[in-house]
Image 1 (cartoon, rainbow, N blue to C red):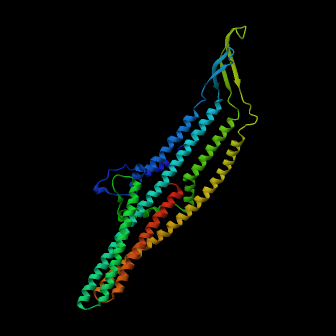
Image 2 (cartoon, one colour):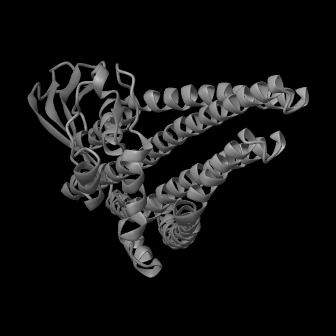
Image 3 (spheres, rainbow, N blue to C red):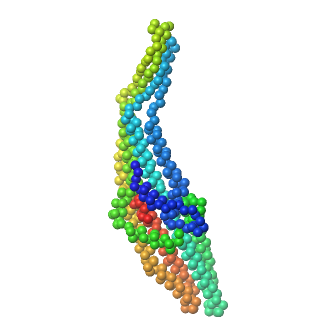
Length: 413
């Protein structure tokens, strides 16, 4: 059984052909990151290889019992030589094949679930690398602003306008900014390393600039259905539910196999018997036929059937349990996404521009001697704090979108 989700994954995630990396093409979009990682990472290859293992069950299901050689030597010049055959009832083969096909379908769904979870890991790594790089740029801009303040403080000190303490305070602020830049650069290397490990590409890639992907990242929320509609979509597409449904199909097929095994397979021996005149006056050679059939009196697959019936009941509860988990995940991810989206819109519409204005005004005021060094430093630091909070909100928003995608079971992009 093939599901709808694999087609969605292939059309959305693998819809773009992989490109060869060049020095000018070292940045990649989110969709291309999906494409490269799913095509190159050995984790996805390992997951897909499980299908071949599952298909071996179908080959084994077609295997019939081996014939044997029947030899009966009485050591008195009477011999029996022939073949021993176990004849399986035809329904056994049919039930085994049906169970193997159900297991293959279950493996197929589980592979898709593994790829879907891996897709979430790619998106998380991509966004973390993107935000880390932007954070580093913000820290670097703060250092540049504070360095200019330090230059102004030195200039004013040389003119006798301010005390040496202003220079020391500005110098300390620059040192602290240098430390933050170093830490931010390390985080950029770390997140890029993690992203490229997932991409498993021979070339080194990095996320596209935030300015080119921010609007794309934020447009997802404006196109989202309501919570009840999202929950309905999740119930129709979540692979966890499909896995449980397929497990029930496998369990049902195995129950048929167990019931089909109640009637034992008969075994027949047929061949030639030889008697000589020393022990028998007949001195003859003729054929013989024997049959051995177990009676299903004591062993009627009771334990196996009881276990499979109990498993069926447990899977019914597991299905309801997964529905409850999905309900919780959809509503929680939706609310988290809304929370961060409101925060982002406020930052973009009001806080960022105002913070930038305050930063510029504080620098100019200190240069003109209208404010002290502490006010100028605090203004620059608060400006960076606002921009950092904006990037944190953007990261939290993207992680919430990622969780919402996982909750409903289909891509939002």
